[in-house]
Image 1 (cartoon, helix red, strand yellow):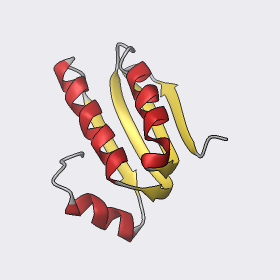
Image 2: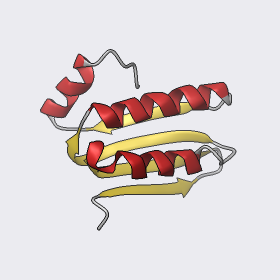
Image 3: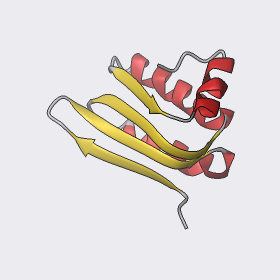
Length: 99
C-alpha cells in the first residue's frame, strides 16, 4: 500500500505537484521514480509539500536533485511547505536550499 501521495495537476503555465504522507527513506525510490517521470513534462513546476506524517533528509535530497535537474532544463521551480514546526526545523538544519 502506498503511504504517500504524489498528485500532478496541469495548469496553463505549469504542473502543480502536491506531495504528502510518509516522505522518507521508506518511499524514496518510489518518489524518485515519480519525479523522474515528472521531468519528462515540458513545463514549469510548483511543489506543495503538506500533510507529511514524516519527512527526512532522503526526501529533501530528492527535492534538491530535482531542483538541479529542472534548472539544467531551464525550468522554473517553486516549492511551498505546509509543515509542522519540527519538520521546519529539520529543513532549516540542512544546508540544502530547497525553496
